[in-house]
Length: 386
Ligand code: NAI
Image (spheres, rainbow, N blue to C red):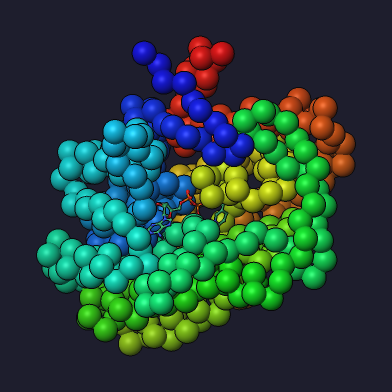
């Protein structure tokens, strides 16, 4: 019997395990159809590997470049009280297919901020990767960072800074658009968001791996960021998340120095705005994504996470620290999103958008389908459950 999606606000409360496998296989099959990229790391650690950009990177690395992978994620297994999270099933589906292709694939499920999980990763690199890693991808998205020394929980806040933000936000449960006002963040909220989503933890991971002598020659490390066009800056780039992403860039420069003796590189890749478990939480971001999807699909420029990560491997990442970067050392996967033609059309659509016309004017269906697919629900399931 088909499982019906249970959505509360912007959260899916359940998932369809079979659909999750199907969604992972769809990404794997896409990658397998592409030519092998020039950059082919053999042993890859992905922190935040079970969904969104991290899962897509893992798939591009394994099934495109032939890499063995260790994936760290925070997911729930099925239990008497719940069916488990989509990422749990994504991890299983990934490993099953990797095993068939004779690739090493190891899932480590737990809090990536905790010393125990870090030690588990260190041990696994020693046991399964002969003690070296060629690529470390940091793709965590979380609202909470536990400080394992003090026991304190630091929480991020998605807010503007300096002045309040007024816009429209999407409710996926009721399929409605509502006005939203966000008060400016306090200094503490800015600092806490930087602590949770900035570069400190990434840096700690690389320090740990360097101390334990687990970094291979020519090692690369990547973390993901978003900048976006000016119309989103008030909410994102100049908001608390933007502060965190600028911190990521500062840490990237320091990590890059740390990797010089390895002839390695540390890069921030600026990705396209996409529907993921994390991004649907950003209030006010839905209308921009729906308009962007509409325009990029019409111009045949639309990419999902897997297309983004596949293109990053094939066009932007190069062996020996020679990846393609801009003047600020950023890998620009948002290059198509920021094309003037795309942004002009997006702006025009957003000017016409109302609470009544957004479903037909923008790509609401596309956004909702992708959201459902993240949880293993394909459109057929949705329509048959209505
Ligand atoms: P996502 O929610 O799809 O994935 C987050 C991953 O982090 C999951 O694998 C989850 O299990 C893992 N995770 C969360 N907390 C954890 C913890 N404490 N310990 C271990 N694993 C944990 O998120 P998404 O969107 O793929 O985000 C990944 C990165 O990409 C973030 O840095 C985000 O800012 C960035 N990004 C996202 C964009 C978007 O539009 N979605 C655009 C550009 C960048």
